[in-house]
Length: 84
Image 1 (spheres, one colour):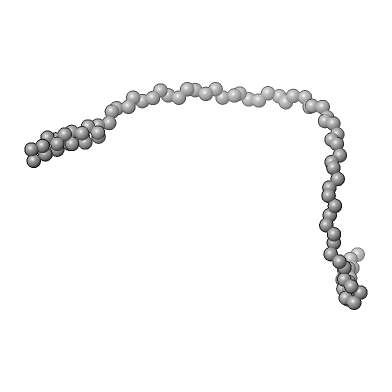
Image 2: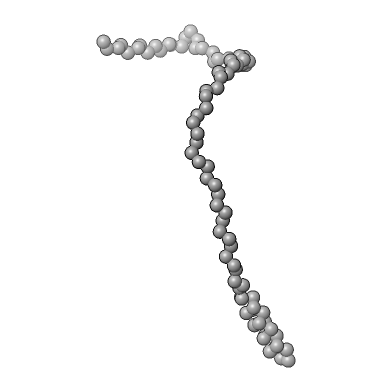
C-alpha cells in the first residue's frame, strides 16, 4: 500500500501521455506531371517482309479402328433432295 498511490499516478500519467498525438504538418502538394501533347502524323509504310521457311513435317497419325465385318448390315442414309 505504500507504493500504490505513486504507481497509480505514474500509470495514469503514462496512459494520458500516450494518447497525446502530435500535430502533423500538411505535406507539400504533389508535383505537376507533364501530359504529352497530341500525336503527330503517321510515318511512311515500311517495306514488305521476306517469306518464311517451310515448317517441318508432323508425326504420323494413329491407326484407325477396324471396319465392320461382312456379316454386319450397313446402314446408308439417303441424301435429302434439294428443291428447285
